[in-house]
Length: 160
Picture 1 (tube, rainbow, N blue to C red):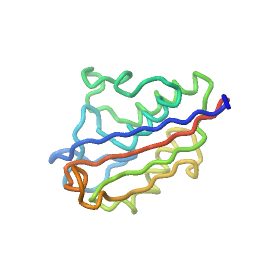
Picture 2: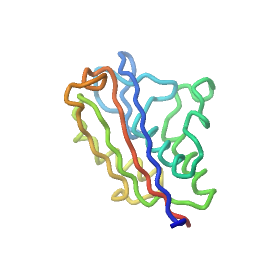
Picture 3: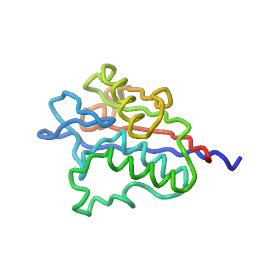
Picture 4: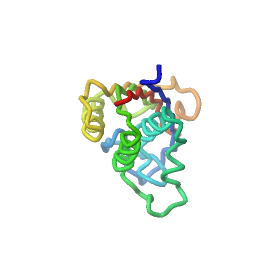
C-alpha cells in the first residue's frame, strides 16, 4: 500500500525550575518546566518527528537545529505548522495521531481535551483524530524520579 505511511516519534526533556511547562501547545500549571532550546514541548516534538519519519525526512533537529539562534524559545506550534506544510507540500495529509505523555506529575487528565483541541486546530484536523493519553513511569527511571517528561507519538499519513 503506497497510499499510507506511518511514523513514530519520541522526545524527552529535563524538568528545571524557572521554565513554564508547555505540553501540546498549552501552558500547564506546575512548579517546574521543561528545558530546551525552544519551548521544549515534548508532545509536539514527538508528533513532528512522527510526521517527518513517516516520509523519511529525518527529525526536527534537521529542520530546527538547537544550534540555530532563530529557534531559541520558539513556540513549537509554529514549528508544527511548518512541518505540516512540508508534509502537505509532498502530497500527504494526517489521517490520525496517537500520542502518550509519560510524567509522574502533574496529573494531565484535566488538560488532555485542551491539548487535543489546540493541536487539531493547528493541524486543521477534527479533534477526534488527535489522541493523547497520559501515564506515569511508576517511579522508574528519570521520568519516574521526576527529572523529565517524555512523549511518544504515532502518526498515520494518507496520500492526497
